Image (tube, rainbow, N blue to C red; front, side, top):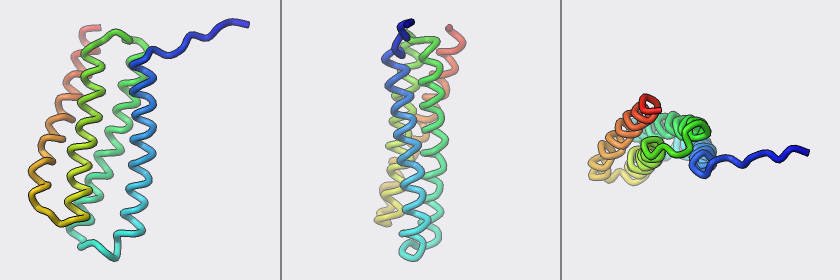
Length: 132
């Protein structure tokens, strides 16, 4: 029987992180759709939905980083892209979830940091591919 090589560590890390992030996006989205609909003002529910939307997009982005890491296992650019994408999910989506749930407007000041992390992630991903 032929031995199957294991996935590179970075591929395993970002594939698993992307899958977990996608799972959380679905669960958080379902919670918002069912439990928050009657409890949160419509404008804050829209903020919450934006958080879920970007969370899910970037969960898929993490999976793409993990797939790319199968071909570029030693790319520091790609690892930075994955970590920036993960940071973006936490900062961008996390701040929007908390803002919608608490109504604390100052949390909106954190959201652009997450957006910048998303932009950096996609830029780093592009650099990793170009340099490959």
